[in-house]
Length: 193
Ligand code: ZN
Image (cartoon, rainbow, N blue to C red; front, side, top):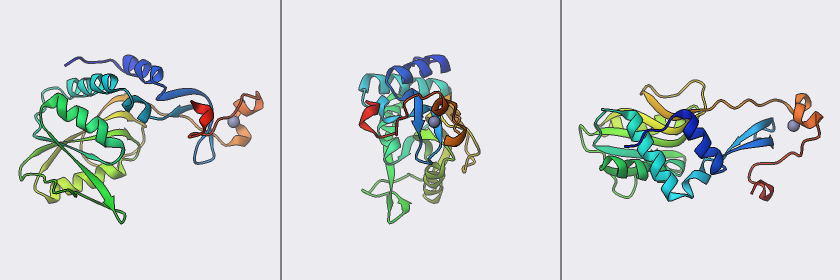
């Protein structure tokens, strides 16, 4: 497995336009000079495979029997990590707001499970996946993500991320980019592409 430094991961994510620099209005209404759209990485199977291998390399000697990920963000990277590990992959999804395992997916009793997510902020979905694993009698050994947005987490399992990225944001009224008349982009807007 080929390891990557945080600087290499940052560079790869910027090249894939998963991390953009500029002047952005976030969904919160606040402004930022950085925007993260991790799905752009997952457009590229070769890059996704390379990053998944780097995640496995960073996890070191830990042993896993199964990879589990929350839909939708964790599915593609979770599959790639499972492929790199040579183990099975399952995903959870929300049914009427509750995180569940559907499609006859199972966590075998005693299974050592790796939880995979694309971006972890508070890790609410990850915490729910961990609960599902434990309810089934499995062991949540570790969590891995491409990006850790920083801050307190809602789960009690070790997190191994390829990149820690804390993005600053501020109220529009105190935005230096607004003051400098830098064009403002809204995430999801066509102008981003
Ligand atoms: Zn602004």
